[in-house]
Length: 105
Image (cartoon, rainbow, N blue to C red; front, side, top):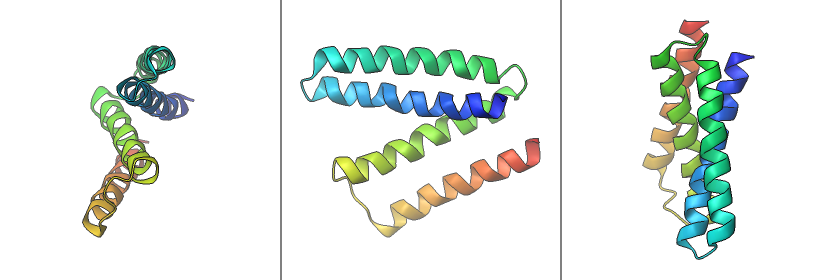
């Protein structure tokens, strides 16, 4: 259950980042709503997850989820670069998170 909360926390961080993107593109009311709801729920969920998951592991996984999903969304929705090196480094982040999960139980 705590790992699911951590996953949800990372996903909600992405919602907050998408809110920032909406604000930057001129959709201020919707962007502000996404920003506040995304980051607010993200922080609540990560604090719940850290009741059991150690801080270092929780924060590493949290930031990795946000980084990977934001990068993928950037490539698919906003035409950010899709070069093989970038995709390789994203894959390495995913492998690292799996490794952290395996060693932390």
